[in-house]
Image (tube, rainbow, N blue to C red; front, top):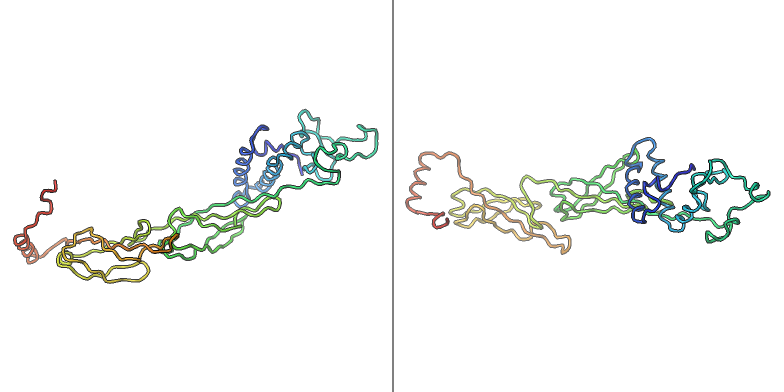
Length: 313
């Protein structure tokens, strides 16, 4: 594997804190992940970021790297080649291999033996890469209003590395815009054998032509005539899941009055109890009236004088 300056790979200084290294790794992993970045060298960049983080996030490995560069035991010197000191240690020489026979008078020298127990083990001990959990991935989907209220399934189409994947997301009843549904193990793959991250599905609820939501309650406007509101009537009103029901309009009901239908709202995800449905009375006045209807309204106004704004202002 070619040598890289791990600090430059993550874009941090050699005095960067563990938190700065973690944030840089998270940012670059998202930027170069093959599922997101389709550029030709994205996959290689992603591997370099994971390799750099694997070393710099481990205190012992980082100390060894700062001292010896990529030639430290367990480091990633060029495969099949003698260890190379160039660029790995401050003040290092060129990129050619080091001939240890020139340094120690001939014979084969084991680098572990030279460095002794500085790395916490004998010559045969191998440094293992720490496994890291993959990053979580968040996507936003828009689901129908009724699915959010009653629950259901949403088919999610993903593009992973140029391959299409379909996931069936179970939507619990009562979710609202901003809710998160977690799919364990469906995020970015882990590094060095670590577990995959999760897929976080953020919910955005589409509007409905008739219903609107206030917390766990539903509201629906029901138009009535002047006569129905004045004299009282029985009218049909829609519910979200049970079809239409008959609602009694009491005599003298004003426009904007709320009539409560208990237990026909949205289920509470904590208590599992449903909210209520409120029928909002909307008095609708005809745009045109015949001469006879106008005359009757004049007679009504004279027979039953009423000043709704009297003393209001």
